[in-house]
Each structure stands twice: as structure tokens, then as C-alpha cells.
Length: 122
Image (cartoon, rainbow, N blue to C red; front, side, top):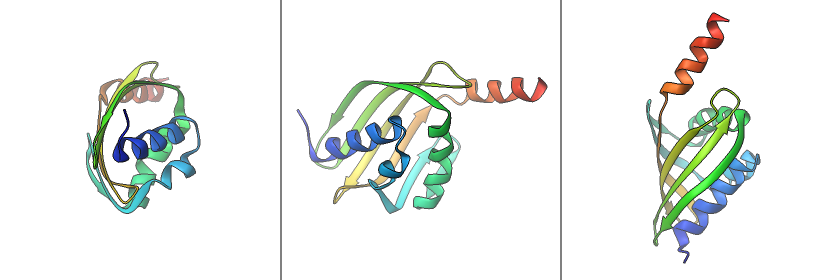
């Protein structure tokens, strides 16, 4: 069963995990607020600076679950990246007029910090 918010969330997710970040950004509102583990970001350009580099190191993704209603969608997925083989994540997306206006993303930064530390020592 789909919903308006879930349809947008899935299209956005499919675009960025499918290596088409520019298409993904067409689903993002100019004034998006993104809540990340490191703190909030405001605006599409700040969001692009956060999410764009992640899509460049992405090697794969598996959608585990997706739910939504008229304005909110929740996605849970596993990602694989060059530095971290298994990086699960979850996103709660608020959608208005076909655009993601708020995104709350949850993931464990610890493996990424460890990978950066190991690369710096090498």
C-alpha cells in the first residue's frame, strides 16, 4: 500500500541509492531541514553538502522496510560503502506538495569515524 509521502520518499531513496543524486535533489525542498547525528542542517545546499559525498562512496543499498501516510514516511535500509561494508540507516521524511521538507536521518557514525582514523594512520 502506498501513500503520497511514501511515494515521494521511495522515489527520492531510489534516486540517491541508484547513483542519481541530481534526480534525488528534485524531491528536496529548497528550505529542507535535515536532522543528522551531528546536528541540524537547513536548506538544500547544506543538505547537498551533507548527502552528496555519502552517495559518492555508496556501493550498494537494500531497502528493508517502508511505511507512510499523507505527509510522513519512514524508511529503514542497509547501505554498503567503500569504507564501511555494513551501514544501516533510517529516515523519517515529512513531505509537502511533493517535496521533502524535513528529514530525520539516523545512522551510526562510529564505523565511519573508525574508518577515517584507520585511513589517517595508514
